[in-house]
Length: 119
Image (cartoon, rainbow, N blue to C red; front, side, top):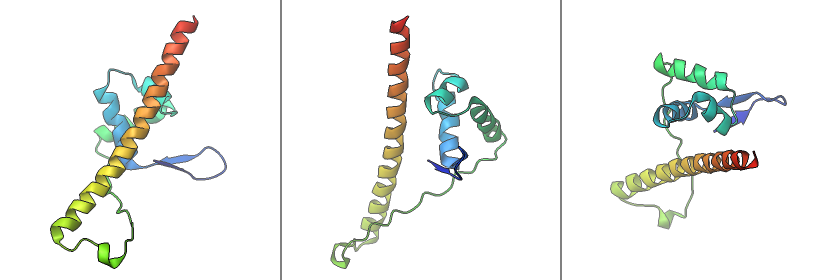
């Protein structure tokens, strides 16, 4: 998702993450500021990503292959098995990202509920 580049809080986000954030602001009935707060981002970043997305500056990078080495006897033999395994691995990566986001969204909703009941 993000990598810290130095001791200061300078973070580089992947293009895929930026695209998902932009798409999320379009799908949900939430402002860019709310999405930025949920994901612990600065709102200006979300606005800038939205603009860059509209201008076509984002190109989704191909997904990385997961290197899970197995003994040679357990390697899939047919082309269909290999392609199915690759598809399933990609799906696992996507589902993990989605799950992480949903956890953040759940925390945000709980925080909003707690703020509302504290008043």
